[in-house]
Image (cartoon, rainbow, N blue to C red; front, top):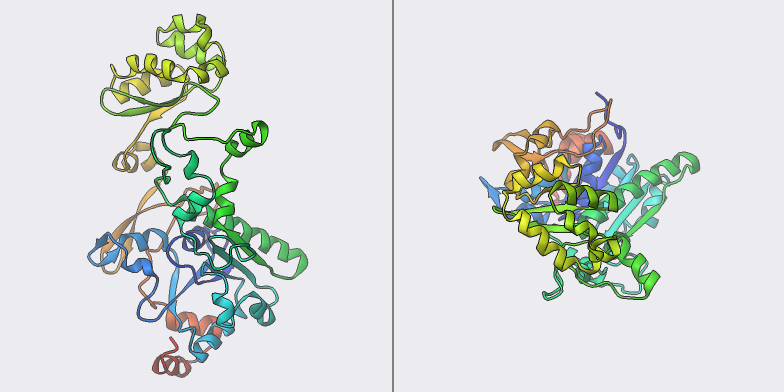
Length: 395
């Protein structure tokens, strides 16, 4: 079965998370991703724990479906090898500090002279075009600077980082959209272009109604816990054995919720007759609802409320979500063969096509595993030329 991005070749300098996440998704979709790593060391995440028989679970989680080659970009012949590969590539990706590729003589302006059709994508904390040149950016920096931490957590607690590295992941996804858009534009213009992604821009763009509320009211949004700022009940609730969420998004659902759970008295209470009123009295409302939920197990509460047609669900721990029947039904956990480990479990690609295969198919590569075959295929080097590169420390 065909994959939607077959025929697209990406030379990927991505390291750690942001750009590797982008190219992982594109590789899942069929792009040929050549991961370029430092000889002898590779991506830093190869040394990130936890480990399975010496193999980094972190590295494997974001580098499946890719080929690995090693190039010493500070060696003249290593640099020339890369330029020779660019001639036959569609995309170059990197998430170094701004200026790194330019210092090596392989920035976008250099590469488009070699291949005018090349699409060049970069991710960094504050962008290449920025008033903060040289400022490094990690996920937590992006979440903090971009405003996300200021609205995450509870009012009486410090600003909180979102549980996953969303600054990296969102940046990777936006970059993927940018790459595909640039490739589509190239079909019309015949030319590539540079894509400049700032992690802080990406975080600000997903603040959703926090920015809209500020523009509308002039009031700075604050941390309010898990509840919604303008809908109620829309929060996390304690149960007898854990936690659940309930999301009542309109008055019709509110009426259904109250009647179904025997809370008819709330329907006539002026404090709860509209979303605005319910939001203003959310603490009182939550206390009343938890009198009901804490008397039920999570499963029973979810089952009862769900049958009313009111959106709700359990707050799952990781072990529960990976073993949920729907996870299996949608093939979201797969076991791939691995030459050292025998096999390794990974989360599958969530994008499901009706007539194309997008399931992951290959575990993450060993360092430099594809050197010879890739260099011969893309750069056209002979076995003798490749031996010289090895002997001289260029790869």
